[in-house]
Length: 121
Image 1 (tube, rainbow, N blue to C red):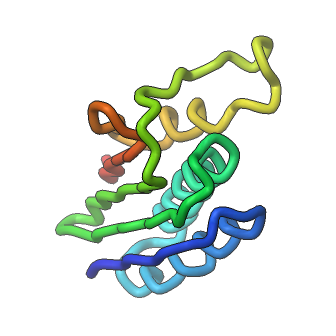
Image 2 (image 1 turned 180 degrees about the vertical axis):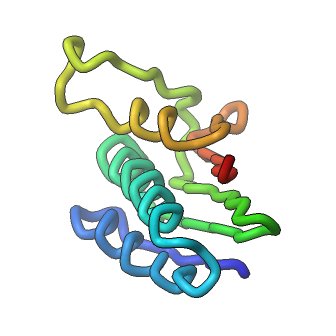
């Protein structure tokens, strides 16, 4: 199952992304769906806050054994974001959440095109 959605870069984008991901509910257990929704929501929020204010594309693919792969693409060219500790900036915990919930994640070189994988262990 695949899902692709394009969002406007505004404050409602993270919520719209979460709602769009409900389409995966038939193929995922509720706990995995919640994790995917949270990861995508955090990445979309980062794209809204730090991106170039162009459309944001979310792509999520459900593979075998509840293996989820996804991307959040905001058309930026800024490069790799940094994970900050809570005491550095309490409002910047999104990438810590992404790092904790995913099996792997990263950014394509020279872009802000973030990919992630979530594998049920």
